[in-house]
Length: 583
Ligand code: ARG
Image 1: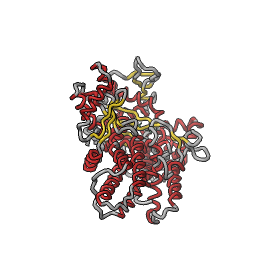
Image 2: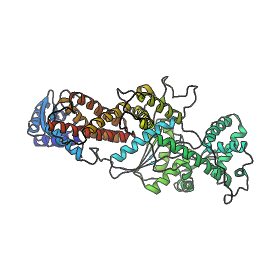
Image 3: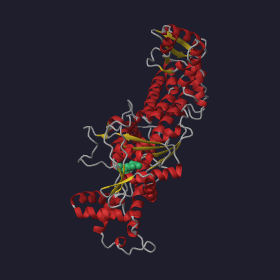
Image 4: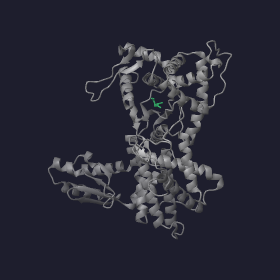
C-alpha cells in the first residue's frame, strides 16, 4: 500500500495539472493544524509566482477541481493561499480497509531490493557486558527490524571484540596465576591436549583486575601486549585458551541478549577478520596508499576541505600487530566478499565517530567496496543517571548490563504485584517483558544521537509516553476481543470524532515508517505508537463497544480495535518489544 500523503499528492497534482499548473506543485503533507483540516498543500504559492496570479486565486481553482472528487469532503482555499483538505469518512474507511488487506499493514516497502548489514552489539569477549552496550543492542535491533519491515534483506552482525588486547590481558593474568597450566607451555600440543573449562565469573573478575594492573605495572603491560601478539600469530596454547574463553563468554553473551530479545544472524568477531588482513595490506600496497611513520604503517585519509583534524589510519603498529582500524577494514573485505551489501551501518557510541570516518575513507580509497556502497556510522549518545552523568552503580562503578536488567525486571514485578490479571504462572515472564518494554521505549523515544536520563519510575509508569502504557493498551484491546471472540468484525463507517482520530492515526503510521527509515531513527515509530495508543484510549472512552446495540456499529468497532492491535503490534515488533497478554 502506498502511503497516504503519496496517494493524496497524486490527486492534488492531477488537480494542479488540470488547472494548467505544474503537477510537481501538488505535494501534500499532514496538516500542522489538525483542528482545521487533515491534510494541506502549499503549492499555490509557487504556482502564483510562475503564473503571476494571487496564490489564493490559484488555491481556489485547484480546490474547485478537488471538490469534485468523492474522496474529498472539504477542499478549502484559505488566505493567503493554503489548500486545506479534509477527507470524506467513506474514503477514510476505504483506505483503512486497504491497509487491513495489505500484508504489510501499510508499512511502505521502501527498502525493497536493498541488502544491509548492521554492525551492532559490539561486546568485548572476557569483559562483562556493561550498560554502554545496552544502547547499541536496543537501537541496532530496532533499526534492523525497521529495515526488514520496509522490505530490505538485513543481517545483524554482533562483531565481538575478541581479538585485541583485552584477551592478551586475560591470558597474561591467567599465566601469572596458573603458571603450570599446560596451555602456557611452549610444547602445548593442540592435537592431544585441551584446556579445562573456564567459568565466566572468573573471566569477569580477571579482566578488570588485569586491566588495572597493566596501568600500574609496566612489565605486566608488556607481557599482555606480547600475549596479544603471540595469540594473533597463532601460538597453539594461547589459541586453545582463547577458544575456551570464547566458549564461556559467548554462552553468557547469548543469555544476556536473549533477555533483551535481541538476536544476531551473524556471530562474527574481530578474530574472523584476521585472515583478510594480508589481503588488506596487499590491496593498500597495490594502490600505493601505505606510508611508513615511526615504524608503523599508516594511510593518509585527510582531505583539503576538512574542517577538523583527520589523522592517518594506523594499519600496522611498529611491533607489526593489528589494531581496531585494521580489523574493521579487514571486516569490510569479508562482508563485501560474503554479502556484497548495498549498505553497512555501524551502531556504535558516537564518540567513535572519528575512527569510523577514517575507516570509511580508507575503505573507499582502497576500493574495498564499490563507490556506491553506503558505509554509515549511526552514533548514539549516553544513557545518564539523574545527575546527568553516565549511569553508574551506587558506589560509582560501571553498571553491569545483567545487574541493570535485574533491577528493571524487579521494578516491573513490583509494579505488577497488585494486578489481578497476571497469573502466578505468567508473573515472571510478564515482569520481564514489561521491564524490557519500559527500558527499550525509554531509550528509543529519544533520537539516538541524544543523551538521555535513565528514570525507571518514569519508564514504568502506566501513563504518558512509556512502553508500559503501550503494553497496557494492547492488553485492554485483548480483553475486549476475548469477550467478543465469536462476533463478526466488518469495517463500515465512522460514528464519532474519536473514532475518526484513531483511524487517521493508524493511516498515518506509514508516514512514520517513512521518516524513521529515511533518518534511521526509531523515535518516529515510538511517536506513532503513542499517537495510536492515545487515540485508542479516547475512542474507547467515547464508544461503549461491549454494550453497543447497533450490530453494524459494534462490528465495525471490533474490526477497528483488531486492526489497532495489529498495527500497534507491528510498531512494538519494530521496537523489539514483546507484548503481554494481560497485565
Ligand atoms: N567492541 C567495540 C567497543 O566496545 C565496539 C565494536 C563496534 N563495531 C565495530 N565494527 N568496530 O567499543
